[in-house]
Image (cartoon, rainbow, N blue to C red; front, side, top):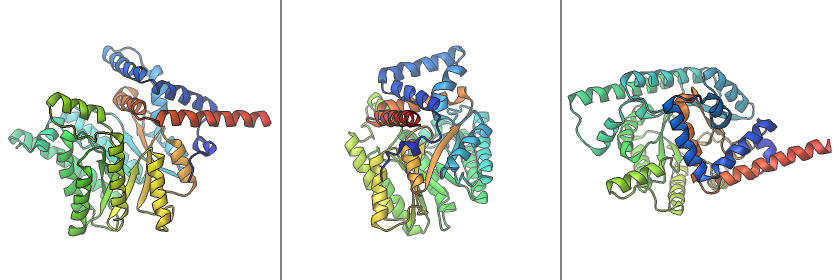
Length: 392
């Protein structure tokens, strides 16, 4: 399996869109530009300066499908024509009060309703902390007892989550629950375990947990979860990722004086990730793999394993997933070869999705080799198109 076919990879992009992508990834290759650009973006929003045009035609255009569901569904349909499924997410973050958390619930339910009407949207996703105060998740993770008022708030959090899961079950839309920072994750894992005990008793899992393998303890967590599934006879859906909060995790560990939960090197992270990957693959009778990765090496490991076991490319228990606007060379070449591919498709008003867009920019700047790879492939496709016009 090769990912070099740029004609397939960028078939949805015009020349102008490709040039814009190239300029954007070129900026991402300069860490200092990403750092100061992120600070500038937050400052512009804080002081109320006009920003729509600037962001819309740069990071928003690259990483978001649109301001609303209608715009986003056009992108979903385009992806579907190339055999790529999608899962949509209203990407606004950081709700601080009960009204905001209720609006988060409404938006997830809206996404589930849209997914029900479109077979190209087999999954939906939410962050558990969108439904409750971050402080309560942190307190639960520490094992501290909640007081009467906090318990009432926590019960509303659980009600919101159960409302989403019940709706998803009734409409047969599967749910991915995002991973979050380590100081919130134990509380989320506890919630997810109860959800999968309740909802994952059919032939395939309804609820998927996200496991960040850059954490030193996640292989043990994964192994215990699979053993529990075998013992209690339920299905496990796992979205396997390397991780998204490395800077925050290390900064908090340094500030508070506890050992960082993150692997000490990329090599250790990769080893941990591969161990988790093969653990899931060797237990497909009770597990389903949702591989959230932009790594060609990780993708090829799964493909080689499937070929060795003589599994079909579109095996129902194995999904390959990438973010919208990134790693298109993996997504579209995989889909062209018949594998189950799905894109994470975020949407929302520009002002509300800025934190998400900043994380995408920082991710591209921090992952060694990813941005140069994107740049080299875009250059290759632009050259191919130029040569094609010349020969015509």
